[in-house]
Length: 75
Image 1: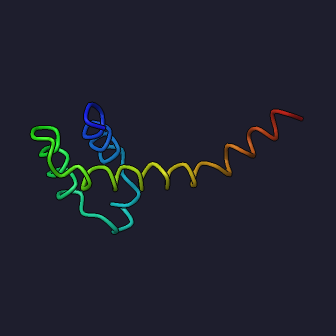
Image 2 (image 1 turned 90 degrees about the vertical axis):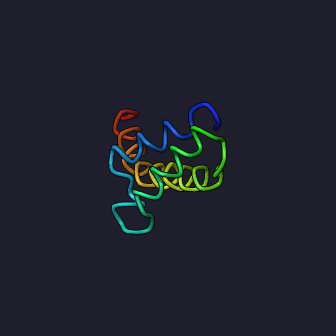
């Protein structure tokens, strides 16, 4: 988390984080928290929680398409 968390959160925000586009989180505040965390190591939960939520949400959104592709490849 300390090495890659802020960078990963910034990358997710750059690629259109669903939690931001759907209006659940504030992009400006997330970027501010990521920069603060990268510089000081503080605000870890303000980076960790949205990062895990976004990663979990993306895995749920992609899961059905992955299963359909795997089923087609198996036949």
